[in-house]
Image 1 (tube, helix red, strand yellow):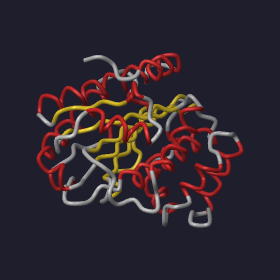
Image 2 (cartoon, helix red, strand yellow):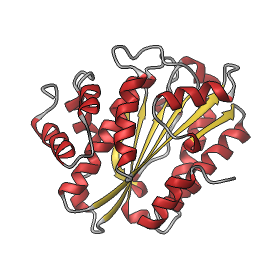
Image 3 (tube, rainbow, N blue to C red):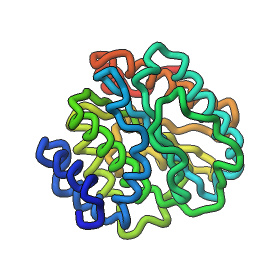
Image 4 (tube, helix red, strand yellow):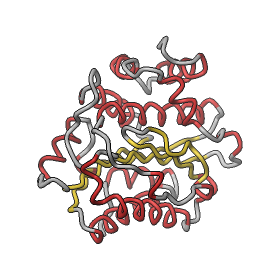
Length: 266
């Protein structure tokens, strides 16, 4: 982990010591150049500033490839509606959110959901490739680091990550699907994380296409959702996810039930 800063190195060392991450996950994380700087930028607000001991960490990864251009406006609106919907739940004081673009990187670091501003067209440009595996490793590593920060502060974190894409990976080398799978498997085994995939069928692919991509990445089938790229379908899908977040954030027991059940029904 020589590519990370001392602080991030300590965070991951603690994750390994606690059994939350294994060697395969560390090898995957080590493939990302400048990951220490990436993580430090994304950690955002210190969790010690939150009075409650139970914390929900919500991470969103948006595909910003050129093929997403046709749904760009709809994704922006759906993100804003997702934040608004979760914000209206009773657990807003302990929900932190971060958002990343696959190529452009960090949109905003971890912050309380009440402090998240609406996305604008200027925030989300869709003119890139699809580094799905690399960016997934980055976001999951950041999520794990933030979770370990909570644990080091004697807080009880639970995390929910949503990965949104409309196609195959084409820009992640040397990171491959197996690297994502290693991290996902370790995180899911700890029973403190939900990792969801949403596949946008903007290029004529079918549900099996996205299911296989996400399954190769280690996601559970009940947390894979494939949708058509119509405004109504996109709103519905984000609505399904927002209900899952709201349900999972109620309590530790609710989180476990939601994790086992998968996406809530519309």
